[in-house]
Image 1 (cartoon, rainbow over the protein chains, first blue to last red):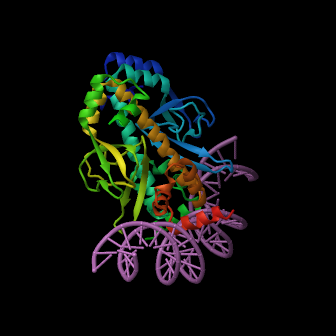
Image 2: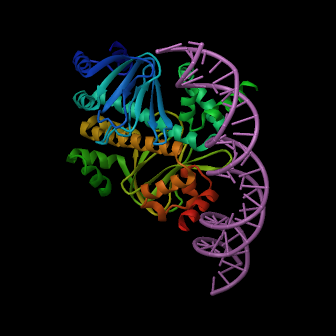
Image 3: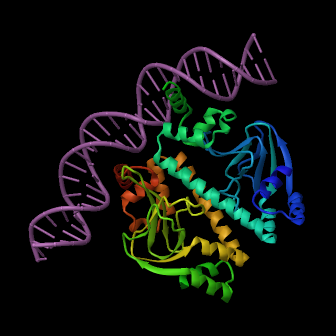
Length: 191
Length: 191
DNA sequence: CGCGACGTTGATTTGCCTCAACGATTGTGG
DNA sequence: CCACAATCGTTGAGGCAAATCAACGTCGCG
């Protein structure tokens, strides 16, 4: 819990009331490697804050192939943003890639807090805006870069992650096959 | 101006004060086909609301190739979201694809209004959230679909646009070449 | 130990790109 | 009003980057 509060306090002042309200709607959890926090087809609407460790969201196609939409580590939010704001069932799975400490908050409860504490809503707006910028950049990368360039960009963007994330998940994030990623890695190593 | 107000009033109640404030920061403009509303490397921070017509944002690579990030028609917002919320110069161009009627608002002015009228800020949050969902879906499409599938998805998603948008721009939006799009179109037509 | 998950490597295929050429259309100036 | 250039869509030939298919080594774990 303290991690989340400390994180928010970097940007805005948190009154005692807000802290108490926040505590009430937040459920802290320790999860193991491989554990599913949210499964597809769930009607739960949650946002997850990562206090430590690493998670990802991914989509399973009928043919069994997985596509990673997002990785998140310390101080990131992660969620199924495609269904978070509507009534549809979840499309994505949220999975932990390591032993992680996370905070789970119901979207509905969060919305109430945004309204009750305008400065908190403002902070959230900033988060949304940053996420939009990040998503735009990702789209741009997918449109313009080769497999090798995408991986190199990943390495600089996500430096921290590297160790915890299996390569086949990185590949599914970049939109290439694990085999291609392996060849790209070799090419980079021997140059 | 009325278009923007009517659009917002679909979601929230607009007080006379808010309407007046909104009018003060909005500049209405009629633009022609091919006209640039925002050029790259500008330090203007604006959001554009489309009252009628059709616009797009695109990025120019050094080699001259263009990549379309977004199309927008009646009742859409369009902007360079990658630089809207920070101090960097604009990366994208905003161009009109037809005779269009648009409203231009400075981001800074909008921010003030969000703070002054919380329910207006809420409406904006909803917009941001919808945009995030849309961007996620687009990323998912880029990760999973073939050229043909992407075009078919485009046709259903953007039915309305079809007529105004040149094919080479659609191609640059889908991340394929105009030649490939042409072949895909022929394939679809003869089946 | 033996199994399964993961990464790598090789051989082959393929979807899409590149390059080039050619109509069709549009708009522009003489 | 027509000639001309520019823009756009299409088509073909050839090439390439990445996918597919298959095999194998390694590592961690029950």
